[in-house]
Length: 325
Image (cartoon, rainbow, N blue to C red; front, side):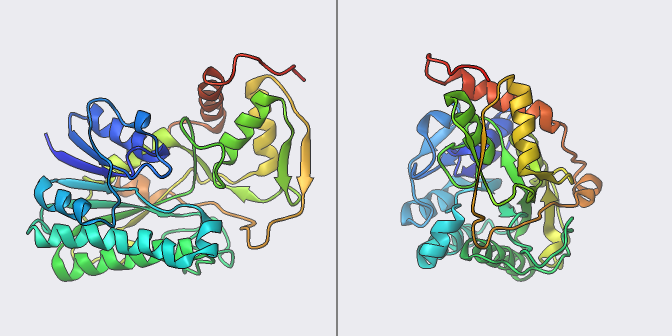
């Protein structure tokens, strides 16, 4: 039995990670400031603290908690917000993380607490990289959000090499599934589910041929848990202690829209809007390293994941249903 802290555990991915740790018999504590997460997402058997990761209270919880592992998912995740206010993005994503890491160090648990950090595989490599991208692909992040994630990975490598922290980064591709916010920027699957249930057209930016690597949230939670058991060499650099977590399959936005309408058994029009400046055109990840070293592979196909996600949203939709196309 181990004590696990899940930061951002009231959020979309974090709540699934908390559930997966609990299912494995671990004791789970969740911290989340509820700025985007929801209290109802937190598993009933997890201990919950409404805290900002930048706060002294969060640092004190880490110092006193005796945690064997920290699954760090709390973050500012909106790329556009990071562009509008890079200072706030760095305060949360970089300084908030350092607040927790310093608390681990000052508690004297730097060698016994495992830290698994949720990084980005979709943004950290940048648009100059030709997919599929491996962990060693050169990093050219194109947003303050991606720069912050890259910076935290560097800090974790420093803490590992200099202080002996057992740290791993998991670089997620485009995660989708139940509980994703349909009103945010990143969740195209959730957005499409909401539009489909309301009988409203999908909006596709550009020609719709831009590709993403869509991975189901349950598979991501499994990878996060497996990563806590991985023990990289102390001297390992940033890329050596990082794992891409995706499917290795590139899917275009128009193909995603068609696949979702297929599993839902209903159709809506697809409207095309001007391409958004700075949007990645191609993104997919190689996942051979995670398979070899973590024993992890995605188990949910895109069709299965879309069906589960749509069913979850449909169960929570208003009772008045749109006409079928």
